[in-house]
Image (cartoon, rainbow, N blue to C red):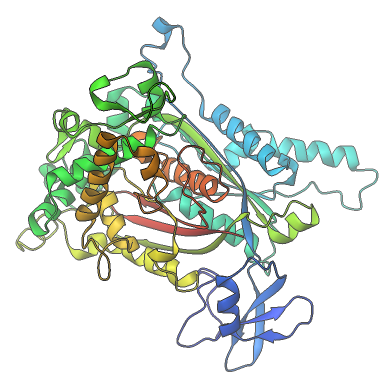
Length: 546
């Protein structure tokens, strides 16, 4: 019995199987213990063809993954243009395909490739402008199939094969976890060299225009699936209130507030910290809005005013506290910031890059991952049991912890101490608090025991630096809130299922030292986490400098 290919290819520790690696040059089997060391220190650039090894039959079944790098990572985010007001403004709301085209072309250019180099496309669905078979739709609309047919006709006389260059399309939906799930799926398409796909280069694309939806249209589209689930289960109408997603996270927040030491102020501090980071990213919605509307009460000049013109800003707790209420325990500023936007990742195998002379020593590669699931919504399905009347149990939170643990193990038993940057999903503050706890930044052996304590400590450091004029020094400290240095969903912008890809783009930029003004010094490894539904789907990937 061979190990299931459904599992992540680098999860090499099981009770029934022992993995070994066949050296691509000599064909000898390398013990799994040696392979474990190799995967933890991959900068040597060895060329290994890896295989599953069964301890009973002494046979090598297929090949384990090639090394897969992220060679292109581009994003864009924009304030929405409401369709009910666009004519009066003389503006036209963006189209999803046009935004995808923009980031795809930019990412391919960054990678030094063309669309004809693509072997596959993985796409995510959207809330607005959604399409049947999204990946196939976008590949067709972008002309990817047409250019292959044109290439076939052009080269028909000299080609030995009358068939056009193949393109594999896959659509994947795990909600906000989708970008990380898609990253791992694209990695599997490339790394599983024993399959028949032959994928060497894969694009991951996502876009949405929820920022340009009217409030009513957005609310109806976002709520419907949860109302359908409620009705399917025969639950009373009041079990799911509108807006459904904020109310779901509000329930989880209330549960945490009542059962742990977490405080309401600590949740607001999440927004303040994210807004501070977003102010350092020139493309974030927070940064763009602050350039046109400066709130001097929230800003502090740092350093010599005559020498520097830099302004560091953050959203104050009072501003968050007085923001309009969306649900119990949630204000408007504690919700993901609705926006239009798109992102694209280009993944390629090390072999392909070396053949093209595009391989670089510090190129970000995927070294681990994990995915787990939980219930779609915290519904109180056992109303007679006070322990579960609010629909919240330990199981509600389990998928994030499971995905983190599996990702760390698959990357060679890493821990949070081995990670330099954390791209953690933060659609609402409680989601980030739970992610901080799951990824190991707090807890046993750490100065802070809970996510709330960690956030409060970082907020206090930020506030002191702002008041003392020492922010420049604080930003050089690698321990200062190395989370979502682009601002996250709360402040960078959140086009529905796209935002986790913004976190991946930021991780790639940090590893490549392309995060000017917000760089984490010598960033070598990054964790990226996406969350779908109401803590329903968790996907984690670990990137490292090659």
